[in-house]
Structure formats: structure tokens, C-alpha cells
Length: 354
Ligand SMILES: Cc1ncc(C[n+]2csc(CCOP(=O)(O)OP(=O)(O)O)c2C)c(N)n1
Ligand code: SF4
Ligand SMILES: [Mg+2]
Image 1 (cartoon, protein in one colour):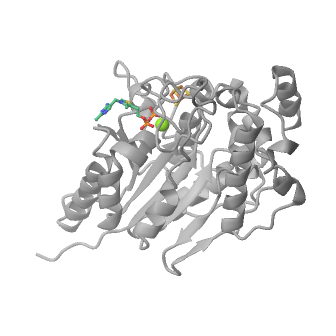
Image 2: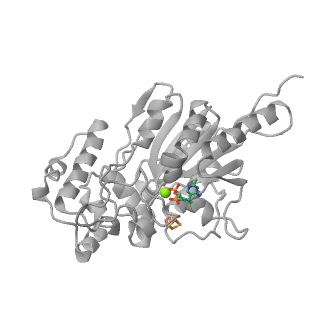
Image 3: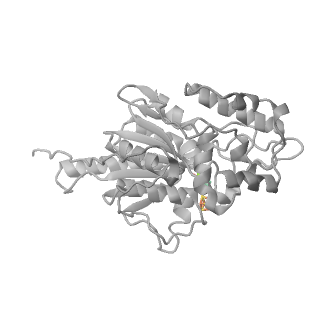
């Protein structure tokens, strides 16, 4: 019996001048595979990301969700916001489940058991799942190059179980597993695992990119590039969690832009054809890390020396991307030029400037 060729979807890339969330693109798709009706917190970054991502993918999409807030809060009592097929997987097996869905569609289409185009197969794993518990199964799916997009929605902690530290929690981040105290005043001592670079280095045949909810069009384009890529793709998306980060609810998108402008979430793409990083993304401004930290209660305990450590870390990220550092950011590496974290009034003043 002759096999049938698999027809794939090609999604158009949107105009994106990288101006952040305040830029409106009239070409935005109307499709809403992620609709109201969920039980996540107001301003939930992962939910905002989910809406953008699924909007970019469109209706011929299958979503896979390992355990985490996007499963637990989004699928209670037979009520879900998913307007397309969605499946929950055990937290450690997101990659193998997604690989199975992809392989099954390939086989069904070739055998004539499924008519229509190959669906967009998207796995949405939290950082606890993608960076820790389910890392092996995701790496397996990428390594074997199954045609799918695996997204880590990175809220930098295990949110659903009550805000525990993950390997993505930043240095200095307060969680229930990294409380600041006299012995460890900075809270978390370890720096975050560089998960996206790990994925690019270990699976160079895959499209890999970082993104943020602060840049919706850029995020949607990276989703589409990942889906258009024939084979496996990986996207890591900054998605703030107001419960764990402790900030004013309407500031989710602002934080998504600030984290990039402060150098704490480098934005790049890995080009699998050329086998090189693309560092072409440029935020509108470069700011000291304190402007990002001051808006969040999870960093409220930091002393000047800890802020300086985070500035050194951010400056290393800029350098890694070949971006020259302005004098102000170099000076901010020295604790003598800094103060302990801001009082509420100062934080409010910074908030007004964002
Ligand atoms: C094997 C296993 N270990 C632990 C848990 C408990 N658990 C449920 S949700 C969750 C948090 C997952 O964190 P993350 O993947 O970052 O998603 P988030 O909750 O932040 O959305 C954990 C640890 C589990 N369900 N299965
Ligand atoms: S705890 Fe955080 S990730 Fe979970 S639903 Fe609330 S805002 Fe979203
Ligand atoms: Mg998480």
C-alpha cells in the first residue's frame, strides 16, 4: 500500500518591531484556543503566555500539559479554557507523551487513518517540570527530533505546590524553600540553570529560542518559527507569577519587558541550519537590575552586595550576547554604589517610570 505524504501547516510571520506589549499588530489572529473560564490568579503570566501561544498556533493544535498550575488551576471540575484537544501528563513524562502524539499522527496520516494536515503539537511544561523533574523525557523528544514544539513556561519556581525553589529560581529569590535569614541573607544562593542554552547545545538540530510575555508579537513569531521548523523545537518563555513574585497584579507585562531590559532574561534564537545563535533582538533600553528587583516582594530582603551580584550576572549575559555595557551598568556591579532594596515608597516611584 502506498503511503500518504504528511501535509504540514506553515504559519506566517508577523511584523514585529520589538516595541513590547504596547505595539498593536492588526494582523493578529482572531482564533482563541485558550478562552476565559480558568481559575488561575489575576495577572497570571503563564496564562497570558498560554493565550498568546495558542493564538499564534491556531485551531489545528493539540496541547499537552504536565502537572503544574496550567493543569491544576486550568482543569478543575470539568471546566477548562482549552478550546482545542488538550491532555494532561504526569509531570515527569511530558516529553515522551508529546513524542508519542507526534509519532502517532505521522503514522495515522501515512496510513490514511487521519485526514487533514499534521496538527501543531505543543507541550507546555512549567520550569519545575522542564528544568528538573521532566528534563530527561523532554531531552529525549528533542534528541529524537519528533515534530513538536516544547515550551517551558518559566515562572521560576514550583508555583502550584506553594512556591518552592526550582533550578530556574534566580539568585536571591525568596521561596518557601529558600527563605532569607541570618545564615543565608540572600535567600537562594544558587544561580538559575541556563536551561535554554543547554537545550540548544545538546540538541543543535532543533530550533531553540527564549521569549517573554513582555514582547507578545516576538513571542508569537517564535512559536510560529518553532512550529514551522520540521522537527523538534524548544521555547523558554518568561512568565511572571504574581503570587510567588509578589507584585502588583497589572504589572505582569511590564515585568516581562523589564526583565529583558535589565539583562536578566537574554533574548535570542538558535538557528539550527546555520548552527549559530542570533542575538539580533534589542530591547528599547538597558537598565540596572535594581529597577526590576524593586517591583517584587521576593527580592525585598536583598542587601546592596546581593544586588551587585545580580548586576554582575546580568552584565555577563549582555557580554555573552556581544552587547557593549554602558558605564552605569558597570558601576552598578560595585555594592558601594548601591543601597539595600527599596522601601515601598521608592518602589512605587520606580513603578511610575516603567
Ligand atoms: C512526580 C511528581 N512530583 C511532584 C508532584 C507535585 N507537584 C504538582 S504541581 C508541582 C509544581 C510544578 O512546578 P512547575 O512545573 O514549575 O509548574 P507551576 O506549578 O510553576 O506552574 C509539583 C511539584 C507531582 N505532581 N508529581
Ligand atoms: S500561582 Fe502563579 S502560576 Fe499559578 S495560577 Fe497563580 S499566578 Fe499563575
Ligand atoms: Mg513553575
